[in-house]
Picture 1 (tube, helix red, strand yellow):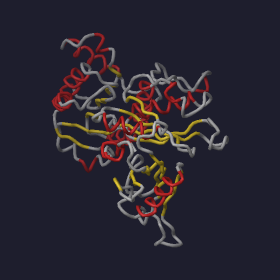
Picture 2 (tube, helix red, strand yellow):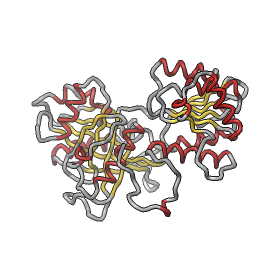
Picture 3 (cartoon, one colour):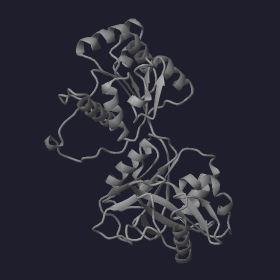
Picture 4 (cartoon, helix red, strand yellow):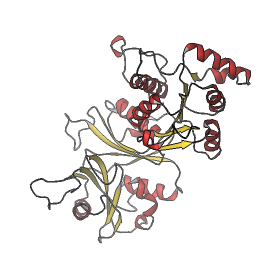
Length: 383
């Protein structure tokens, strides 16, 4: 729904015809569009957007008109049928779960109409839209995007107090990560939902995915790229050595850049493409790359800066950075030797230790402690 806000200005004026928004809330297998993709259908049949490039559009169009007539939300699932390849479904072999929500423009009691109107008028400012998927009543809560602490009260209209802590933690995680995601939590309010089933919400944001910059084209980089992709990062590999920085060696990287790492980071920072969610991992083991790159990275407001190496190389690197004028508080931000102490040896194990440290940093955890040795809440308060 959020992706269409800028295109719905005319449809949202008071007195306009009602419409419905169909949004992809679940996808599996080979599907044409990701979670958060939306299509709007007006009562007169007009359409904005697309969900699948054609293969289920007709059925979604009919479902949207039905939602307008009934005035309630519902979910539909579309998938390939082995019994009837020509039935409504995805011939590419995947399946889509679609949430259909009616919208009444100008109605002060319609939360989606109000949220969409504000989104259409704000000029594309960062925002997050949260909707409840497992109830028939239309819902929508508009939140500011960004790393600021989430106010639990903002979500109280969607879930009851029992589900609020778990919901807040997951919504905050999606707001940090960017993109769109469906989250589930312990049972909440019972109006229209089965008490035994988890609460389901769709969180849509205008933030792009956070970035992870890997410096150094080697086997450890390949394993780390695969691991951090699971956390939703957009991953860039950068190395000045063209013979090693070949895209075919790192097919899961979003981009492979041949350049001096410090020069690349400086250009990205100047262009505003690095922010407080960005992580940098230096895996080169080469002082001519390590020191200039770390000197620059530690002076930027990044979420995570780590460097691979032994304790001896770490000590030498610290001295070199100190000699080049890097301040003590900036040096304290360096995660080196990189990763948590898991006894990791292989590239894949090291990647797990780095990702574990990254998750801990995201949530403000200062030590790696087995959950079996702790008590209290599993999830910290949203940051």
